[in-house]
Length: 181
Image 1 (cartoon, rainbow, N blue to C red):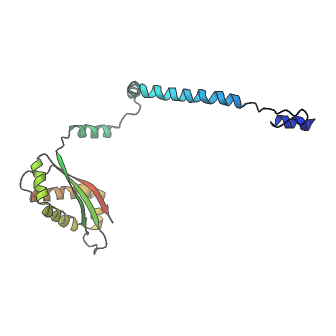
Image 2: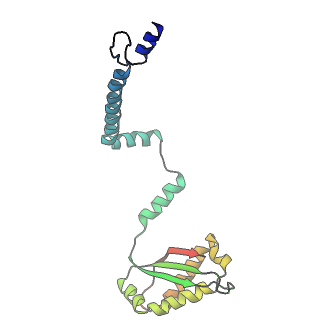
Image 3: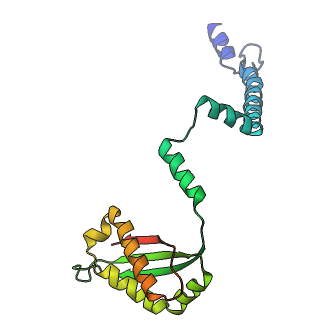
């Protein structure tokens, strides 16, 4: 008889009566799962729908505030007036003293308030590219690899390209690609 009770408890067939027994406890999970899913979905919807109010409360409590440096940078960016852009792509240079074993590939973004200046650069693109290659080719691998040197290099390139064009002046120059191998 103990074996028959064990068989019933295991969810099998009662060997004496020939009846099939059902497992208990599965119904609770079937009720709990949809309740949890609906609750989680409703909470997510309420958070999404009320995000501006939640963000304001979090800001007032000091949660998620930017650091002083980030706020300063954002304030500076807000005051910048951008002009027109063009890009000189895939300029490849062998650095000084690399004996042709190393290379730098850069792409430069050029910004100017005057669109006519960008047309002038496009017309003189070969001369501008040659000027950039000469300047970058004078630098060693160590100089080109130093991140703190990039702004200095950018300023030097800006002044050199401004010397090539006669109408207007380039406002800013950006490295859009900088690969040293």
